[in-house]
Amino acid sequence: MPVAPDAYTYTPIIRGLCDRGRVSEALSLLDDMLHRGCQPSVVTYTVLLEAVCKSTGFGQAMEVLDEMRAKGCTPNIVTYNVIINGMCREGRVDDAREFLNRLSSYGFQPDTVSYTTVLKGLCAAKRWEDVEELFAEMMDKNCRPNEVTFDMLVRFFCRGGMVERAIQVLEQMSEHACAANTTLCNIVINTICKQGRVDDAFQFLNNMGSYGCSPDTISYTTVLKGLCRAERWEDAKELLKEMVRKSCPPNEVTFNTFICILCQKGLIEQATMLIEQMSQHGCEVNIVTYNALVNGFCVQGRVDSALELFYSMPCKPNTITYTTLLTGLCNAEQLDAAAELLAEMLQNDCPPNVVTFNVLVSFFCQKGLMGEAIELVEQMMEHGCTPNLITYNTLLDGITKDCNSEEALELLQGLISNGVSPDIVTYSSIIGALSREDRIEEAIQLFHVVQDLGMRPKAVIYNKILLALCKRSETDHAVDFFAYMVSNGCMPNELTYITLVQGLANEGLLKEAQDLMTELCSRGVLNKNLLEEWGPKLSDQIMHLP
Image 1 (cartoon, helix red, strand yellow):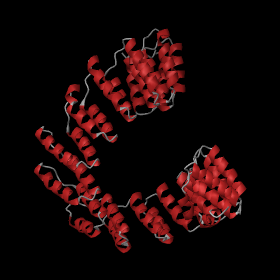
Image 2: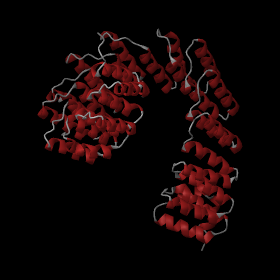
Image 3: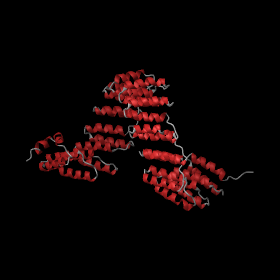
Image 4: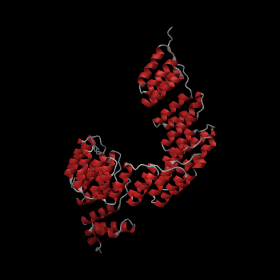
């Protein structure tokens, strides 16, 4: 005899649809349940609510919650926690906290998941005072945090650079019968090292046992990286020996970390000695190792040695290898060799990426070879590599050096139509070109576009417009624009003041120029020696005024 489907039958199917992102079908199946007179359970609704929050958002989830209550299905704490999470997911942390406070009116007390969810939302919003307040409330209400709570807090505190607070949280874990783990301690070590506090990181490494865990290879490698960045080479070597003594042998990542930083500093001989140790510890010399050496030779300007290693290494070169070598060849101004290497790269089925092309585009632009740079960008697109903002900004910098503002404006439209968003550097180049070509009205118009886009122009952009106004002998307008600059919270620099003083002098307003110069010098804003560099005429005329 056929058995009518019930909530236990429907719920796994609804869960499966939700897991696959087919939420609309899951909602249709819920309607089918109700149409057949089958009452969904709290689990059914909760599964749906979670999926709706993730897919269509909190608004529709509240509609499902209202329907749930209307159908006589009482939500439980798990259901409400899903709602809280949905609010936090959309950044509505205040609403989530208010909902948390209202749980008692629904007959529930917030549990560990409730508090942890809201705490995570507050951490994501960097509302640290509210985090501390809610965490204290959680403790006061005897709602014990679990490993998930502590793990989340440590990670966010580290992300916010508050490593001491993260360590305090680690210390609290044992008080609540929660165990820290090596991964969490490694996050703390990494944060300490990023702050340049290598000795503190080393001390924490030695104290990891007090948190109930032991250092692993990642722990040691992180501290070793910090020592290398501080150029404490002997301490780094000692740490390698300590790893072996404590039965935590270095691996390829450990050695490559050390070797990469040595090579970045041009210390090839020391790096080579380390490579010899790798095999002694059963570590394979791989492409990462060879790339570091190639980079080291290029840093030293020894491009021929880099090429010799490139053609003799047993590993197949990758895009990083080629790009590093191309950078070295460009720096050595070996353009023909760079072109040959790029052709070889393509022949060897090692496609260049945007970084590779940008290296060459930058080189061409620096040399004023704009035709070759533009041709290379076209070749770049033919190989399926999309130019990025760095590509366009590099081209714009080269184009605007030739005061070709019309071509720069065309390129601006091109990058926008290609879905690339211009940044302040993009607009700075174009405003500079327009200003130099005395297209000052268009430069100011573009300046206001930058502001309308929510960007804050820096002094360098204001200075370009100020210089153009002064060259036009429109010092009154320049002074007004200077006042506008200050009112917008942009701090003038030395060049700003020198431009104004020079502009006043060029218009024959020598007394005003002298007064401004005297005031600026007395305030320590300007050094008189700078005036000789920026304004020969000014130094000749003002300095001899009675």
